[in-house]
Image (cartoon, rainbow, N blue to C red; front, side):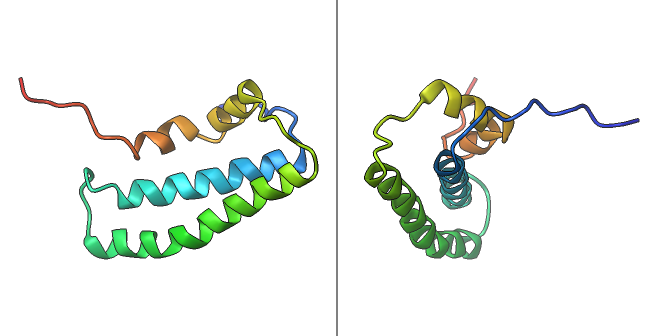
Length: 102
């Protein structure tokens, strides 16, 4: 049986695609650093070390977009791209889980 077909990514400029990629890289690293999640300090340390470089890449992408005159982020389109790329699950790792004291 074939796996279900993923929805198509919306049409993005090359810069928008780069923005989404760099953003998700930062989110993934923040998820590994999140002190509310189980894991080793070494894993969090390695992610924190990598975060600086990925943040610079994200900044550079946004700088390039701005310099090219791309002054608006098209939130609905970029949100669809994030959903296709599993962004909801990936960003959830950055948040604090709801309390379970019942």
